[in-house]
Length: 302
Image 1: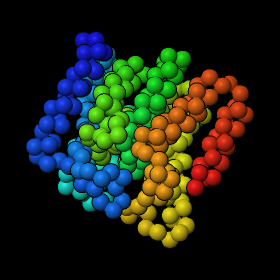
Image 2: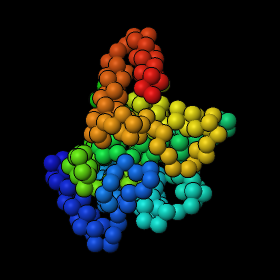
Image 3: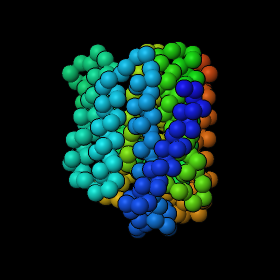
C-alpha cells in the first residue's frame, strides 16, 4: 500500500471518529481558560497512535516497546479526555511509558542519569499537552518537527523511515480538520501526548546515533515557552499544576489579539528557521547565536 493510500485511510478514520465522537458527546466545552468559544470534538489526535500501530506491522524492524508505550499513552489519555483522571494516575502512566521508551532506546545510562532522562521525557509529554491550546499549533509544530527528523534521517540514517513518515501522514490528515479558523476537532490529550512520545523517541534516537546534542534545539520553541512559563509561575508563588493562560501563545491570542492560526504559524515558522540552522549550519557559533536570538525575542515578546 502506497503512502497516498495510508494518508487517505487516516482521513477516513478521522471522519469515522468525528461521527462517533459527535454521537457520544465527546466534546471539549469552553471554560475560563479556553481559547475557543464553541464546543468542539476532542480526541482527533487518536489517529497518531493508530498510524504508529500500522507502521509497526508494515515495517521490517519492530520496535515493540515503542508501540506498547504509545498505546499505553493513547489509552490513558483517551480515558482522561473523557473522564478527567487524577494527576497522580496520569503521572504514573507517563512515567511507565517514558521508562519503556528509554529502554527501547537502549541508552547506556548510569544510575544518576536515569532520573534526568525520565524527567525530560515526562516533562516533554506534558509540555506538548500544555502547548496544545489553540487551533493548528500541535499540527503545524509536529509537521515541522517530523519533516526535520525525516531530513536528518536522510543525512544520518537512525531509524526506518516509516517510523517518521506514518506519524507525519497522520498529522497531515489531522491538519485538514484542525488547521482552520474554526476547528472541527482538537487533538486532545490522546493526540498531543502520543505525538510527543513519538517525537521524543525519534529525537533521542537521532541524538544517540549522531552524538550531536544541538539536535535537541529541534524542540526549542516548545521547550522555551513551557519551561519559562513554569519557572515564571513558580517564582510568582502560583500553583504550576492549576490551569492558566500564561503561555506566550496564550498571551498573543488573548492580550495581543492575534488569531489562532497566526500564532500557530508564527511558532512553527520560528522553529523551522531554527531547524534549518541545526540541519545545515556547521558553524556552532551561528547556532548558539540563533538560540540566543530566539531566547531574547521570547523575553521581549511579553
